[in-house]
Image (cartoon, rainbow, N blue to C red; front, side, top):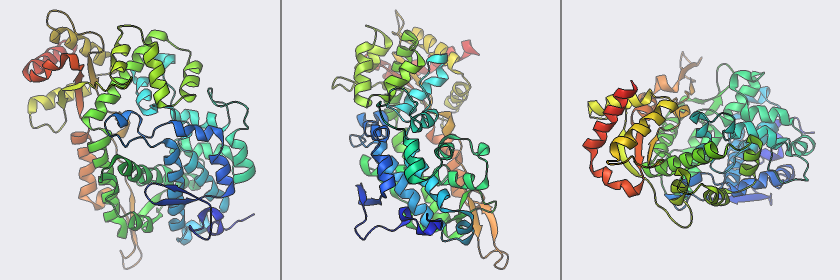
Length: 473
């Protein structure tokens, strides 16, 4: 058994007839027989049916790449991270071959619990549907690894057995790197390994920013110097997280700015948010009406792909229900998306709209529903707008904070070295963290296209929002 991590076949450079999988864009990921065994498992192959960006393809036609492609891409990116990090003596002495194989397995399997539209459906957790919520994909990862998740193809030994016998790692440790909170990890080594997959500059973000940009046809996620950033990776002072040397400050700044611009121009683009809000509201309506058994719901989600799930839910929606109206615009070779009725941001030039943003940001989901009900009555004229005609979209709150990165200045203190943080070293990063919430994270009110005439009445909408917020205060 190989004990020196630098000699592992998983970290061998590409070439010499080595087996590879070819990914866009001109990316060759070397694979060992053990890793191929994991990839070929039906419970991993299931990710071919799950699109990486969910309903975004309705806005960007190229957004049809899958979690399967992304998972292999993260694995390949993690090998690059490790080849760079193992150049440092502290890392070489702190990691063994099992550690390296464990984090590579976690990189490959980090999204194994994903199902169609998971990020959109998980937002329903905030809607107060109790036990009928859609499951969290992180919680499903361990269930998939051990073959316990409902809806998986039957009759196969679990992926965990391949991890034990062929990859020679502990599947429970792999699962912990994927889903455990950082504070719950038992050692500095495991916290360091997890940071390769989950931190401000991790391998997951490096892959999806680049890969999404390639497929969507936009430049925003690949404008940083990838090789420079990889070469600048190091271990932080505490020995439990990745960091960068001062030579990587600019590359790390641009990397974080790329993430900022991808959220601004793609992930939270107003039309993408319209589609996501429609899908979230439609499935919340279906779940509230049918109150499915959580196990049955999970089984359905894990057993289908994006298109099949949408068609099935559209067929099952109650006639003239909000779910039917919403899904009607997303399925059946139609694209009838909701229109922006109002937009609010924390940095709006209009003081009154900033005040409205602040009031809206303070609403919980119960009061958001009450707000929509009041607006439906006041904007409907002689009769209220039908259920589901108005949607208030608040982007996920878990994206509000941009994690910091430690920076090592090797020549400081006469060569003794010193540590700072990227936020302390860079006004750019400090500004990105501020503007992400203030500028990029907009709240929007969407309306069904049948009531699109309201878009031309901004004064009426503003007055209606003021009245509704006053009544709710």
